[in-house]
Amino acid sequence: MSFNNLDTLYRQVIMDHYKNPRNKGTIESDSITVDMNNPTCGDRIHLTLQVEDGKVADAKFDGEGCSISMASASMMTQAVKGLEVEKALELSQIFYDIMLGKEYDDEAMDLGDLEALQGVAKFPARIKCATLAWKAMEKGVKSE
Image (cartoon, rainbow, N blue to C red; front, top):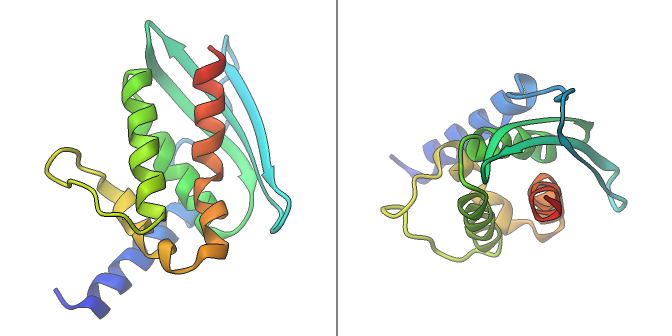
């Protein structure tokens, strides 16, 4: 697949998550709540997590912001649901590395739709948008 086709596919994945977010909403019962914002661009997220027996049993978000911020939140909640907290934190570190343009071992961990955000590394001003939900998730699971 050519670079232009891959870039177009990634944009489509991001726009799909932005227009049809997964796990949008809040968890009402016995959940961890984290509110974070990015004052430089106005993105804000309200993340609720349900952690049971060392695993992220459920994750939902609400908020407003740019397409990258909201798509990343949608992808993050999908990616961490069902993971042990340690694995979720490991995935978060891999995501940060990707945002810094570092390579990752795609054989060791399938990133799924998260791969679509690799191009954000080319736009340093947008990295904070992409990592906002991840920082909220880390803060939440570490508070548990």
